[in-house]
Length: 215
Length: 334
Image (cartoon, rainbow over all chains, first blue to last red):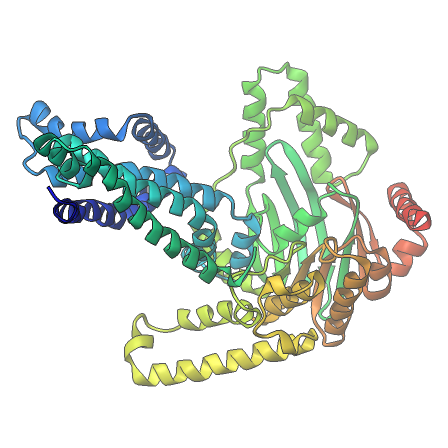
C-alpha cells in the first residue's frame, strides 16, 4: 500500500475525528455552563448532586464512560444503543462539559466581588452584571485553560476506536493488521500535530485579541 | 427634618455586632466625614446606607420621605439566642446577652458593656443563619439604590470597557429598562429616540469626565490609567445616574500621597458643585478641611460627632482623643 493510499485512508478517517471534535465542543461548551451554574447553585441539594456527578465523571476513564454509554442502555433496559457515533458524542460531551464546568467555575470564583458590587450600585440586575461584567472577563481569564483542554480533546478522539468508530487510529490499525505494515500508525501523529498546530495558532490569536485590556 | 437622616441602624454579621444603633443626619450640599479605627464599623455603616448590606434594623429618610425601613432585629436576636442554646451554654450567658441587648437599645456606652461583648463573641459560634430579606424589601431597595452613588476603595472599574463605556453602560441600561421589549430593534421612532438619548448620555459622560479632569481619556482603558485617574473615573461613573448622595469608601486608601491629593481635590470640587457626600476616610487633614461634619466611630457606635473644629479641636470622649493622638503621632513619625 502506497504512501498516497494510506494518506487518503487516514484523511477519510479524519472526518470522524473532526466530527467528534466539533460536535463535542458544540455541546460541551454550553452544557458546561449549565453544570457550572448547578455547581455554584445556592440550592444545596442541587449543588451537592452536581459535585458528586463531577467527581464520578472526572474520576473514571473516558474509555470506560464510552463503554457505559454504548453498552449500558442495552444491559440495563434491554434497549441497545444503535448508533456508535451518537454514543461517542454523548460520552465525550458529558466528560468535556464537566471539565469545562470546572474551568468556568475557577474563572468565576477568581472574579473580585467588587465587580459585582460596582454593577449593583449602578442599578444593574444580577443578569446584566453576569452578562456584561462577569462573562466577558471570565472568558478572557479561562482562555489559556480552555485551549489546553481543547487540545487534549483532539487526541482523546482516538479513544472512540474502542467502540468501533473508524477515526484515524482505527483506520491506521486496520491497515496495520490487514497489510502487515506498521508505519501508518506512526504516521497518524502527523495528522494530530497538524490539527493541534492549527488550534495553537487559533488560541494565540484569540488571546492576543482579548489582550486589549489587562486586569 | 434634615435632608438625609438615618435612624437606629443595627447590623450583625453572624454573632458579630458591627453596628449598634447609629443615628445620623446631613443637610443638602454638606460633606460628612466618617472616621475611626479599622473594625469600628464605619465602612459597614456606609454600605448599609447604600444597601450593599441590608441592615438588621434601620430607617432611612431622604428629602423628608422615608425611603427605606427594616426591622429584623427581633429575628436576629432570636437566631443568636437559638445559636446560644444550641451551644448548650449555661444560663448566665443568656442573662449576659439579655443585658447586652438592653444596653444596646438604650444606646448607652459603658466600657463594661464592651468587655462583655468581646467575651460574648468568643464563646458564640460564628455560623448563624442570616435573616431572609422579604421580596418587598428587595424591590424597595432596587428602587432606592440609585439615589446613592458609590465610590470604592479599590475603584472597581470595569477593566474590559473603555473609560467612556464605564460611565455610559449603566445609564444606557437604565434607559433601555424604560422601553418596551424589542421596541429598540423594531420600532423606528423608538430607535431614533434611543439614539438621541444615548448621544445625550455620551455627552453627559464627557462632561463628567471633564469635571474630574479626564476629558481626554474617553477612549482609554482603566489599565492604562494611574490609580488616581482610575479613582476619578470611578467618581464620574458614580455621578452618571445623578445620585442624591455620593458615598465614598476610603477612596484614597489605595493611593500614594500625590494621587490622593488629586482625588481629594476632585471631591472638594464636587462640594463646590453642591453635591451631598458621605466620605469614610483615614485622611484626617481632608476631614478637617473639607467636611462640614465629622463622625468618629468606635465599636459600632458614634463616639463623637460635630463640626470638624469641635471634633478635632476639642474632642470630648477619651476614645476620640486617643484615636486623634495616635493619628497625629504617625504623621510626626513620617
